[in-house]
Every structure is written in C-alpha cells, then in structure tokens.
Image (cartoon, rainbow over all chains, first blue to last red; front, side, top):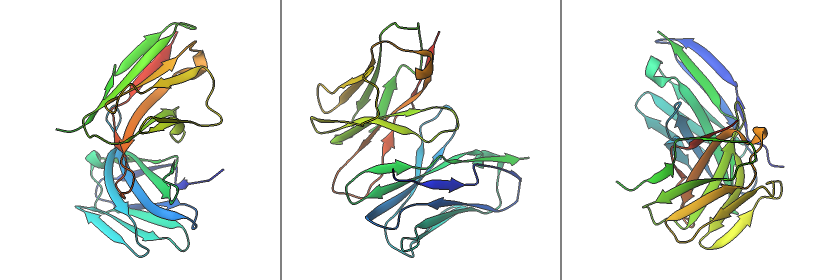
Amino acid sequence: ILNVEQSPQSLHVQEGDSTNFTCSFPSSNFYALHWYRWETAKSPEALFVMTLNGDEKKKGRISATLNTKEGYSYLYIKGSQPEDSATYLCAFRNTGNQFYFGTGTSLTVIP
Amino acid sequence: DAMVIQNPRYQVTQFGKPVTLSCSQTLNHNVMYWYQQKSSQAPKLLFHYYDKDFNNEADTPDNFQSRRPNTSFCFLDIRSPGLGDAAMYLCATARTGVRDGYTFGSGTRLTVV
C-alpha cells in the first residue's frame, strides 16, 4: 500500500494569517506531484503540477515547494482570506502513471 | 469550454435498487477514473479505463461495475447499493504521456435510504 500523507488534517486560522501544510509521498518512482483545491459542492481545482526536485510554484498568495529526494511538498498561503477556506488535496503520480491521493487538509479561515 | 460533466449532482436511491451515475468529457482524454470519497477520507480509486482497457482495483466490491461505450462517456453502475455505499463519486480524466493532472467532474453525491 502506497501512503500519501497530509498534515495537519484540519486547520483554523484567522483572516490575514499565513499558513502552510505538508504532503509526504514516496521518494521512489516519482513522476509528478499535484495540488488541488476543493471547495464544498465544487470540482477539485488544479493548483500546481510539480515535477522537478526543488520546484517552487506560485499562484497569487499560494505557493508550493517540492523535495522529491525526501518525499515532501509544502503548500503556503500568505495572508489567508475567507475565500481560501477549502480542502487542499495533494496527489502523487508515479512512473507507472498511477495517482495516489492524500486525505487532504481542511482549511477554515475565520473572518 | 472543455470539461468533465457528472450527472446527476445528487442521487438518492433505495437500499438494493440499482443506480447508474454518468460522466462525460469533451477533453478527448484517453484515461477516465471513478473515485469514491467518504467523509474525511482520501478519494479511493474504484476503477479506471486506459482507452477501452478496463482496470479494476483489487478491493473494489463486485457490486460496482463500469462501462465506457466511447471516449466521451463512462458510467458507474451500483447493482445493489447498501448504506455503506453512500458517498461522493468523482469522475476524473487524464492524458497519458504528459504531466498534467486530473480534470475532475463536480461529483455525484449518492444517498442510500
């Protein structure tokens, strides 16, 4: 069984706070690491596709880093807003074209 | 816009009454997936198609079947739904050979009464 772990499972922050969470995945047979943002009653929305060790990607106030050698990725949100409230899912894709999801981090931003 | 569409958004079925969920895509992606997600758990892969080739996960119950009549459509059939099958069912598509991720449908929330 291949484990992709996300921590924390849930997080409550005040509006304006910055926050980060972690996705851990196997360091072997790496192909890509995907981050998704999933709001209730909507489709998961792709945030980042990360492929190279040391990758850093940014989209507005959200950024992500990747370490394939040690098997982790961080997602950062700067100056959280209530509209950032969602579940953030990571998915590990291996060289066999298989996707494995983490359990997600549920973020609630309190106005 | 190219997209993945799931119908219906919400489905209520009776215990033991067969139900079919549908997924269609305009992306011409060759791979289609069905995931089941229960509350506070990771999405669980049920099965997927690489083109016409069907791949069933080892722990997917026999109660769950799938059909892909063409590239655009994929169906999830639950032959005799039990209370434990109540969940969100997500369809996703992808392309092999590129590092793109999935494109998801909006999901179907299944309630079994």
